[in-house]
Length: 457
Image (cartoon, rainbow, N blue to C red; front, side, top):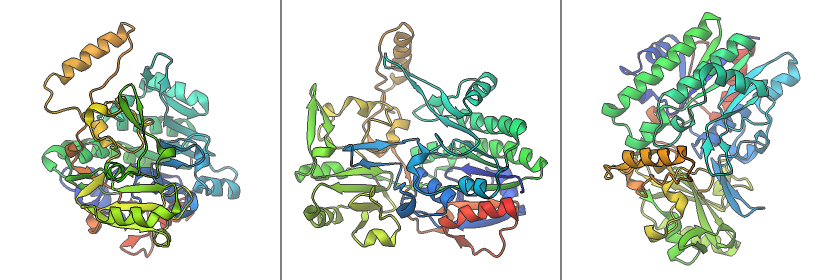
């Protein structure tokens, strides 16, 4: 078996590789490259699950970064149990055939209670007083302590939120190197999220993102040089390409105005009552799952959404099979934005009645994905002073709400989730090993077998 590493450089596309990524450019030029046809939805959890199972969302059940859990009548995002992925993963198959095969997974999603030998994934401590303390979950359990005693506490607030930096990707890379030096797994999966941040904040503005490209290039260089020194086969790949957007679409507000959304009011603020709603949307970047309580409403709701400016596709019934997303977790309707648009989760009509979590980083309470969590209000010149004041209060033992996130979706300039028109915006697969007679473009379900080929042939 040949030692192999898969480095997931989030958001990396051919369009981004050039003067600001000299090492990745040289790796591409001396290796073999193919484009990956995007999965629908082209979002983290769905794509990663497709890559490691070799199956479509209709089979593995990961229809987005979150969905409506019909048995609980709740929308949940960013769940972590590997049991949610309903197909065997590449490491499951290889362990059956080769009992001595070992695998390490560093921060690919659904990385709890998996069959890998070494795993690390973000897992904050949620304390009784409301505080969120950075931490990770690991298998074996002592791996967590080894990593954080050597590398310091995982920089959670630099992994997501308005303070993201290269430090989170550096920490993950260094953890992978430590695991490799101690345990030498046959297959290693590494997730480097850094490009995800400013590409969503600012889009393809090279005056801004050139720094991010330089930073991730250095991290990739460190990893590749280590693994190649061990004669490993190295794969660089991505899950999706991020493209420019300028139009947020508030599907839930549209559904609310037509009487489909049920609202619960608490302390003068509004909450989405999904279980009581006749129809509501679970927004996830450029796609949204719309769930209807009654089948008789599906055609009517679909017709309503088709008329919304910025909507490109409205898929339901047999359409869902054509895109390999027909699964019980899927919405009754799947809505796809056009290239300039993306979907918010916003359901309130008056910002004064927005729920308290709307102005906070709270990925588990929001009934949809919210990229604005990476922003602070650019018009608020005192925002940093407010943050410092809140942190001082927190250190003094006072309960503090970090309500510094704006409710302004127009701040977001980049998104993903739809199938892009230009292959330059497709995810990419680059290897220092022969890909055989592969076409210029491969299907996402072929990635799993390509990884296995690197290990075995």
